[in-house]
Image 1 (cartoon, rainbow, N blue to C red):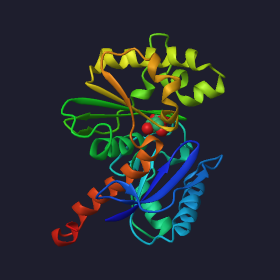
Image 2 (tube, rainbow, N blue to C red; image 1 turned 180 degrees about the horizontal axis):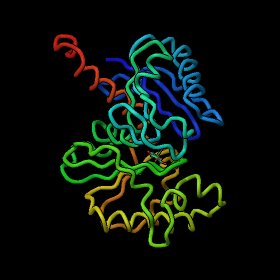
Image 3 (cartoon, rainbow, N blue to C red; image 1 turned 30 degrees about the vertical axis):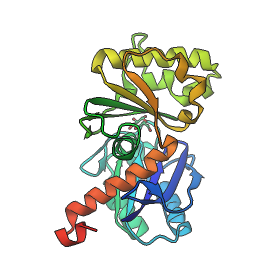
Length: 257
Ligand code: BGC
């Protein structure tokens, strides 16, 4: 089945049509800057633009950088606060004229890696960390997602919110060398390992393309790998999520393709 996957981030909004049976992109990838004031109206405008650029009239899966419970936004760390309380799936569906299903962006990235990528067929505990404007996490056991883990906001032993200290935006904002940032990220991984004892850690987000600059210096008990999909995982996972939701909503004959 083909679904348009959209990854709404604090800095960019990226989308592509995804072939859900293989996890491959079935068309070009489009990227736009996230509007400076990322209000629901402004984000919906970008979604409409991208949907029309893809000439798409089918269902949409959207990864969104916030906790989403019962299709409603609950937090807003890197997005306008006016999103809080918004029934996001209904709102974007209404604004775009097609069914939109929304999931936390890191959970979306994790779904793609668990189904087709670096966390495929891993029976134990897998922690996926997306390093970008924010620090996103998704947690899996036996391939099953525990949704909305906000472990990027863990307070470290220096009292700092991990995201403020060790995200990609912190590295850029504070002009940190890779070595200094790597030490910070190690401190975060150390905290994660003490709390969760994962079997595998998958690192995704834009930074994962530059793996050689920081992965060799990471010191962990668990194996660390970079996401197979790099920062495309969010797009692919959002489409996979929409497919699952559609399968549940439709009568069985339509759910099986
Ligand atoms: C948000 C998470 C999100 C992460 C990555 C954090 O600031 O709280 O919900 O997954 O950024 O975008």
